[in-house]
Image (cartoon, rainbow, N blue to C red; front, side, top):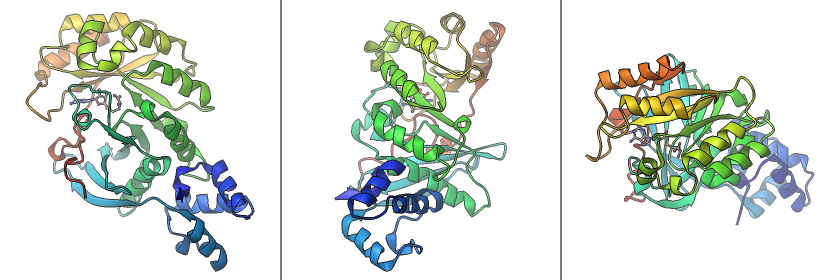
Length: 346
Ligand code: SAH
């Protein structure tokens, strides 16, 4: 079975040519999908009935259904649970900050990076999401927000999975999200977050004509500690990762976001802050401090005054450092909490 939502625009045109149609029909269908969120041939009313039948015969769209919606009572964030074709499930989150909405999007069912503080890693990797499954999370969030006459202003690939472990599909999804016939987002409004897949990052940045923003989950400042919490550090150590960041063709005004999850008693000392400042020297960065969000009893978040001191130390060293609000905690929708009730397939 061939699924049209696995394709980018150029491949959609080829798919239509392959059944003896003019390639522009591919673009027309693509606009229905990503411009109007229509994934049923029957509803594509500017196609002839005959063509719609032919399409039904040859092609399909993957199933993608909203199974559940949980709204935070504290901060207006909304966690969405989606069901996929093969009864796998994923979650995404709509986050609201100061009246602006950000969509936190998943790229994989589960994750194989094994970061010990992250709930998603407990699932392991089940499979990569297809481009359509990645983009449809955004479409679905926008259709929910449309009910409130609002829409997403930003997209962050910080949901379930490691985006750069699903590179080809991520690339297609970003293409569709930025394309004016697709979702038409500005590259300034889209952020890919990685736990540090350095070579994949190089590849992505060489491939992209208009690079999107980049966030890197550094989290620890020496290899031996980072390796124990983030196994990827055994493949790409800090020196290699930071060297890669230094050599990226980052546009002048584009700063890399460095994410740093604060774990009480583990990486939250002033010494860690100083070490972090040293490591990041001369990189165009801003630092987001993320107090640990609990999913089990393994770790805890530092006291507020410790977090503040950590931030101040970075600011004193000349960095922009922010403490990220933990939105959606009461619905298990904050950073590192997504799990999609995984044991219960639907
Ligand atoms: N795999 C990607 C994107 C998903 S995680 C990445 O690692 O960047 C998004 C962010 O949440 C990362 O910065 C990660 O370090 C952070 N995170 C993971 N578990 C967390 C937790 N329990 N509390 C707070 N932040 C967490």
